[in-house]
Length: 366
Image 1 (cartoon, one colour):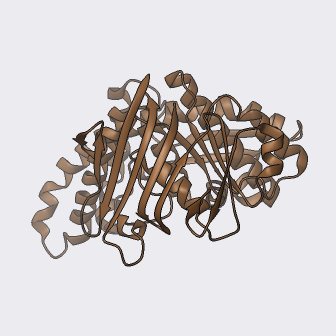
Image 2: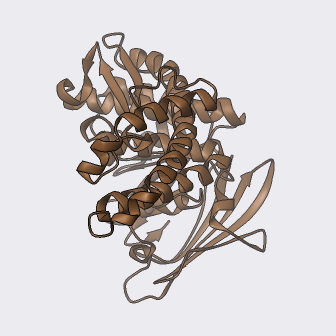
């Protein structure tokens, strides 16, 4: 699985750009604020996922332009494919795959990619929402059929939240509460099972990676936490649903009083420990970076185990805060698939791992 070529038009600071990629290592080099991360962002969008930086697609369109376009030649699904993504302000993004207009949801799972950027340190530092998003993005790439379930859960959560928020002004809304609670519990059960299975495999893969990464000094533990009444989040769907409903029934009056959803998959968390201590409270800067990278490298291996192919690995400014020994570990660990790595100076890294150096200057690629 790889990206062979990409063409950008009106995307971020790229007026017109064209780049061919090496099937293995690509070092994206240049000074700050030249467009290195923008290039990785364009590749990431080809997965069908949302931007990892922009809230809305109009932020991806260059200043003074009405249209942004990303065209690419991919090798995915055992064959060469051509994909075009176009974005206009106020409109939904449009995909064309091999000359046929395609819904964005159908792009999910075509190209698999794993991204590490400085914001991923929030996997350890920030609240549960960041870790849920990490799990859910991974799951929807690995299992595209899961995406409609997540969309259904989001719709039900919004509807139930509106009922609980507005019932005092319109008491008749409470007549709908139990119906939405039941539907949301069933969707929650599905989401919980996906997350629990993914978290279990991620924990198994991340622990030895982190142990090697830290020179044997640290043990990384990852635990999935969900609704307290769920005794086994990997149990059959009906069993998980019944457990969620038990929690829902016991919290019904509390939800009405609080005017908010207090039970469901939106409360889940991925707890991370280093040497038995909660990483969010006790991890140092170096430990945080090492643990976050270990999780991402484990995610990469999970993609390979699931699909039989290495995903495209996007590493944004990953080496700058690592000592020489840990840099060497990362560069050796990521061999075997295609990688795009951003840095300020690329020649030294190219001498160590080979590949192609793409130099970026003011939105131009050479």
